[in-house]
Image (tube, rainbow, N blue to C red):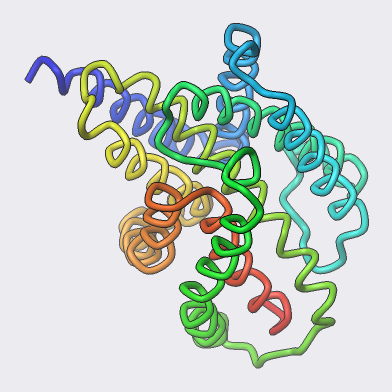
Length: 277
């Protein structure tokens, strides 16, 4: 029981954030859950950088700069992807490009500090070779494509609107935003921070425990408004989505690498963007 105490405390803190934010949202407009967890992850990643930057290799620094640059440039010219204003303040494309580019770079570096200390999620582009990188992209797309088609039909049914075809090129590029940013933040940096906290008390199970926590946080952070309007519906929908679209990238990230999880996520959003959802 003693070794489970820290896990229970982490779970309680996460639940407190969800419940507290939902309670505040009944009478006001607190920050969105995604913004809260993104900010916490970036602060934690920056702290890791300050204390563990010596673990990073030159390729790691280049990977962060490259990824942040790609995220920033593609966000600046995005047409199909329109995120919520960050903390209700930053809403225009160029402001979002700056915020998302910096957050992605810092989160990637934080996750790499964890990876270089034996963390559970690997980044193949920072040491696994380009062959493995390409195979991981193919694997993620192959696993994700059938679920991407299912996702489009599910959105058509639940939203009650027909498919409205959009530019395939814009869809492919804009899908990088949710795929890269969310996977780097939640399934690399956030997961890595949780792993550092639990690896001492749960050495055998830490990877999968924090993978589950990261999955649930990432999944349920999409339901801010529904938690206020109908908490039970939010829980039910969240569990279904976690099973179908949360478990696969978690297995890919922990069993293969981050790139395969990003590819899975990317094909989901590319399909829905091209279909007009």
